[in-house]
Length: 357
Image (cartoon, rainbow, N blue to C red):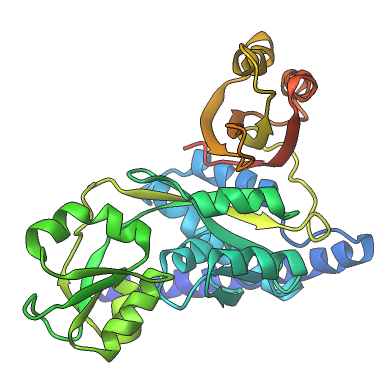
C-alpha cells in the first residue's frame, strides 16, 4: 500500500508540474491574443481538444470523466489570460449555476441574476461576457421566455450544455409533516406534479423566480419546503427530505450559452455543429412546406422545430429551428440562403459545437 501511495504522490507532483507548464504556455498565448485582438475563449477549439482526448483515451479513466477534468484545466488557464464573467439565473445553488460551471469550469466570475430577463439584459449591456439560460426540458418542453427574448435582444448562441435534473424536496425539518407550501420555479413544480399530488396533496404550490430562491425561502420558514438540487441544500443548510421527486427519471434540461456579437465572434466549424434560427412565413397555404423544401434539397437535417405565437393578433407564428451543420459547409450555406428567400422573417440565433459523444 505504501509503495502505491508513493507512486501516486510522485505522479501528482508530476501532474502539477505539467499543469504549470501548460499554464505558462496559456499565458504566452494570451499575450499573443491580446496583441492580435483575438478572443480568449474559443468554444470550437476547446470542443476539438476534448474530442481528441476522448478519442485517444486508453482507459481505465472513463471517457465521461475526460471532459469535466479538462474543462477545469482550461478554465484555470483561461483565467490567467482574462477573467470570464458569466451571468445565469441565481441565486447560488440553481441548476443554471451548475450548467455555467459545467460549461466554463469553476474559475469564472459568477454573476447570478434574479430572472432570465436579467441574464439577457446584463449580457446585452456588456456587464457579463456570457449568459447561460435554460431553453428546453425533456419533460416540460421549451422554456418559452428564453425563446421570446431571443427575438428582442441582440444576443446569439455560441454553445450549449445539458444537465440531468434531479429535483429534491428540501426543508429545515427532516419530515413531510406540516408543510403548508412548496416553493420552486414553475418548471420544477410542473416536473414534480405527480409526486406532489401523491405525497403533499394539500400543500400550496408557490411559484418563485428560481429553485434556489425556493430553497432560500424554505430556510427561513419551517412551514415551507423547496424543490432544488443537493447543492442548494448544502448552500442553505436544509435536509433532503425526499430525493429525486421528478416524475421523469431521465429529466434533462438544455441550456444555451449566449453572448453579444461585439463580445465574441461566431464560432468556427468544429465538425459537429448545430445552427439555430428563428423564422416566420406568410400566412398562406403551403408556406410551411415551402420553408422546409430548401433543407430537403440540400440534405440538411432538422433536429428541432418549435412554434411560438407572434402575438400579432393575426394567427401568425415564429418557428424556432435547429439544423445539423455549420454555415461554413456549402450545403448548409446554400440551404440557409434559399430559406432566407422564402421567409418573411429570418434571424440566425447562432451556430456552435455540440457534444459528439
